[in-house]
Image (cartoon, rainbow, N blue to C red; front, side, top):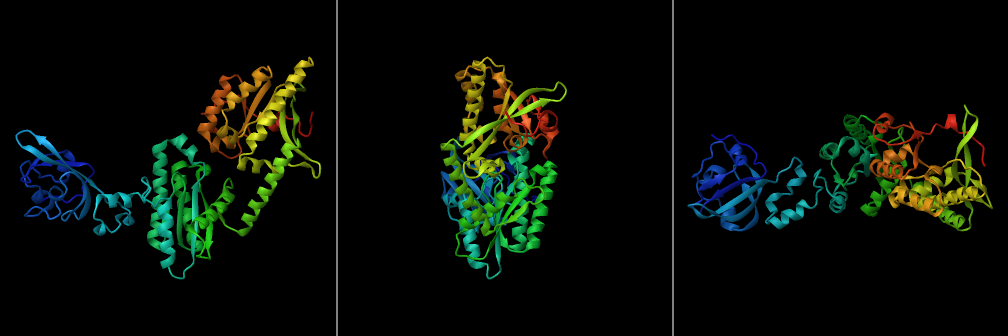
Length: 478
């Protein structure tokens, strides 16, 4: 008696026109330990006394089809073709792949699928790594779900894994995939136990719509956070959650998801609160930010944006050994505007690149003026954000500046915050390497501000960590 096993991937076998098996590979041999050359395929593979009614050879002599094996009780995707075989003439080669999945939703009621093309269409609804619905299919099925879920209040969760790109850098892509699969499995369990629809929009972007229960949301948060700690053992890789409470089903699912992601953004970087629920005031805040952004643009055009130099002081030699260029906005109406009120907004909207380039050039212009006057300038540190490194080849840009103003690279030091390393490790480390090769010193600002510092130092090529308390004389400007 055969041991009943699941059909594995890439089972390959060859049969002649009399349905006798001519050859088969080891995988099929493992599934059917008693299989022999010369056996009838329908008897050995399907436990039928006659050729199967849905035999791929009879109905699909050349191409792909679905085949249901009654004995294994499984649907199998079969590629059928013809092949010349010694002493047998033209035979039929079959390559079989099990299409079952642990996710019950992935079966799609296969008894209603009649073609390979329809199977591909169904398969395209899923993320290939996790098996969860992709973006377009999630919105489609979530709309159906909301129409049929009754009066129970529902909610939509947008879920990200913070600093996931850095996790891939440290632990490898394979570990990252396992991380994502574990997160997806957790969402599947919640969905199966409580109902709802789960999606994976690629990368580390997950979404879940399910019945609203505050305790259930916190249970999911704790469950997924526990998984994250097993993989990374680091608070920097914990999931963050944006929650949208569905009170109006006439709003589109896309808008609901957008609102959940607006809430999710509020939780980024906040290690005490990893979950945030959408509030209408968040949209008002976004509108205020857009208004402020327009004023910053006008301030830039009218030359209200400039920089001050903050001295760097060596307490042992009692000499100024450098300075840091700090961006300042001096409004004719409001006076000095605190950088904390506009710099985060500039980074979020990409406008910081334009302003940083302006400050860098002004610093180089000032250094050139000092040299022309016969002075010996101290090195000036300038800030480079991760956004700059998205849009620019930073090293090439600085090389262009020092050529333009005939400066030595030692006059410019580059400051990059530790958080930039964490958020875009691969991009930043590449930029740092290019800057170092061009002769610039690179300083890490805000070192030890809450990430895995020892792990990071091991992989960084930096000159020093800026210690504000020991080298900078606060409150003094040139």
